Image (tube, rainbow, N blue to C red; front, side, top):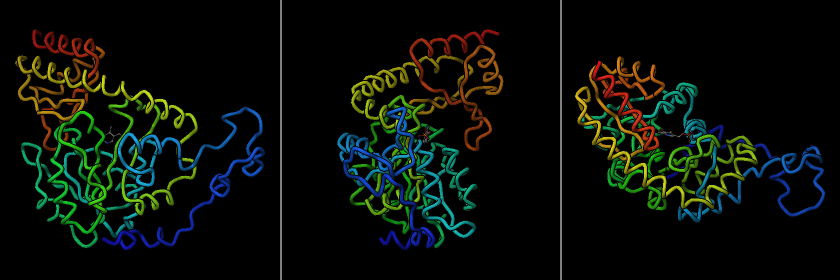
Length: 345
Ligand SMILES: *Cc1c(COP(=O)(O)O)cnc(C)c1O
């Protein structure tokens, strides 16, 4: 696997911006190198461009090395940079399972990259052969979201490994919902699969969507390219501070995840006894996809009652479906009561 060969030639040649904070990394008492204001500490200073402290802590939690980690403003930054590093506009293409997370296609469009969808089957599954058959010599990325949004199901690591083995490009594995799944993460196989990039986020299980913090895990070689292409100060000081705090308080993530998984089971049980509910898809995530009669009507009724779910009725393969995020026990009860009331009308 030659990663350098997969990278766009202009990115290979790029001399990245060298910031004041990159050039001098030792300890000093007087910083007169970055044109900062000496007043208003600590926010007068530029943040650490490579987020050393956050990466050290996250590496320990995830069982990887800091060199295996890129941190960005949400997973969305990790998604966009993958196109910018590997895909030549108007020449290269990406292959993805469909339906899946909308940002893969939006970022492909922004970067002028052809986006090839491989439709999932009726159980929202795919085979490695289907994905690989959609590739050609200009396919640089394959997108696998597992657990998948909006379908909720996870693919086994064996299936993902088969795709990675059979593909001479980068396999992007988006594990935004992995904490809610018992199917296992690709993170532990990173060393054996040099063409895999695993995306995780602080927006879901970690409860930090407002911080904008996501991680890409990959070989040090790939991470070097991410660092070369990213904005120098892509993560602000406050996000880095609060990320350290979240990592310190990570016992809470376990507590939240356990409650949400329990509520997911409970909500599915309750929904299945409601007659407008036609099908509840199994979920490895913090949401469930539900097929109902007249989804648009139910959706509007819930909106009118101040309850917002995601209407996926117009997404291919998801006709009739609403995607419902698991909330607090109180919120889930409000939702159930509202649907029961809708039934009675
Ligand atoms: C919510 C979600 C994310 C998270 O994106 P952030 O930019 O980190 O908030 C990533 N991937 C998928 C599939 C998601 O559903």
